[in-house]
Length: 161
Image 1 (spheres, rainbow, N blue to C red):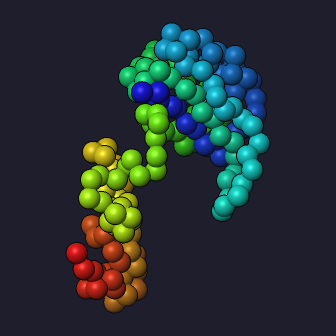
Image 2 (image 1 turned 60 degrees about the vertical axis):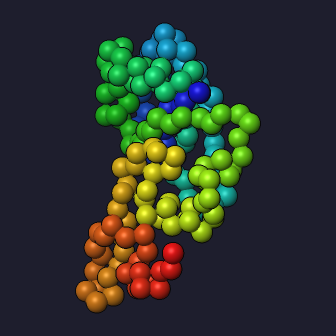
């Protein structure tokens, strides 16, 4: 299944290091079948804000994108970008085609249950998530706390399954 390296380039400091990175990255992609599908184009923001640019690199599968990112050739040039930019980078699987939005639901799930699963930070389809907790405002303490709850404490009592 196709996989992607996706970068939200929030801020880039132009200079010789970034230019060197741009000259060298293509050679690191070739052995792993990587190719740019979005690179630095202006984004049209339709909800909230999006400072910066988007970069998407397509790979044949997740194994190839991981191998590229960990490769000595890419690791050698990586500091040229990380020391001269503020960015978030994720590696993500694509979807099998044909794909429908409801394909993420397990048999018997409904939209309400999906919303609860997502709000609780529980990974979908067996995928691991780094966000297994949610911050909720505690009414009694008047401060933020981290709790492993699918609802804010004020709604926990009203929950019906």
